[in-house]
Image (cartoon, rainbow, N blue to C red; front, side):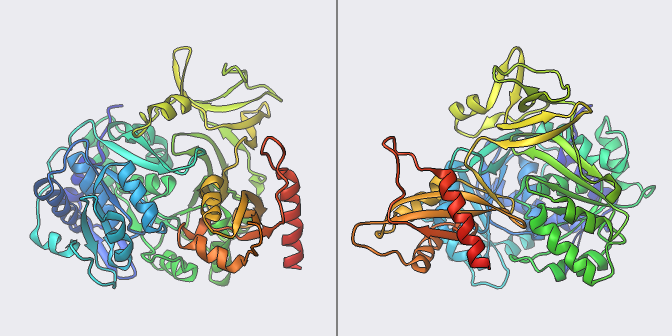
Length: 533
């Protein structure tokens, strides 16, 4: 198929059904024409006032607000790479990503004005402020003023633009995965049109016709996970591509009872979660209410999603749960789809472009018991922004094909399904957020009372894993754990802060500098159990 461009498709929808709701929050409804007008005004500012164009980048630390979607549309319409930065980051973390991605603009809510100002200080980064009740950001132009001035976006978006999607990955500092915008709707054709049971369109006019048709139930998507996460981002933009409506819980902190009210009041048909960390409180809220009768699908990726929680959700409505195994670098590698509790336990089915590779990186036959590394050779991103060495390490050219190999081992069952065995890395996946131990260890070791530290993950029924640490004091010092955690909290996002800290006189490193990590994990698990008891 030829590849419709998101911006061109959305413009066609806005012209055809201008009054259709595009975004709904507790504060009101934004029509397609209004969303188009706001995106056009911001596009004009980025292009005409600030001189941004093809190859440049702009960042946002907005949470799930309508302006986030207008920002994305504005960037795509003029060929600027949109960069979503975690709004939970501290100023130093935001600044590092602004530098890493060469962003020239930062769009921020006024509630995060201090973070935005400190992050952009001295970089020459232009600021745009979105009023959410905080004080105006010094030196920033107000989003509402830009919208009042109006503007027009190009009738046709330029080709060759990028999307830079940050991932924690397995190598420490977050890296921006560079996707070609021209191929995105091809790569996402199954999650866009396949999810509504129609053949992917061959032309832009066909795509617009599908989106504005009233022949099928309109998709209304509520992302419970942040839009900066790949699955929420792709599913939300895909919903807009088929003319659907986005309902947003437009608050920086999740209130599941409020989210459930939005689901019921606005008839959400599709929910996006991050495994048990969101699905469990969703199930609890729906059990207190009247279930999920209007929801027909729940989508999750990148996080533990237990069969027990899926069973509770299936009992609340006639819905399909799609549990994807994917990464920012490629995929989906496999789907675990259940249409009722009878389909449990969920089985991961490899997608047509996914393969298993042996230790010599040769594709192996998917026969019962076959053991290999999961790889993907479908449409892939260009690589990591500004890091050719890491790109070459992750995106492998093997015998005429380009693969991405995330490092997960799996065993084939012989029926097209696989059993994931885990990743040979130390990355802690907590609540859908990836935490690199070395970054947390560096923050711990910056405290004058800490002489040694090691960080690891412990299994957790809700969050998948929790960040845990073992520390040893400098000679003559005593470690006050609460003060140490406060010290870390000033430097790192809250989800990176250890939830369990063990203090030891020594970590008993070997002559090679290694710690006995299995022993420390076992001790930590016992301490946690004792504290819980």
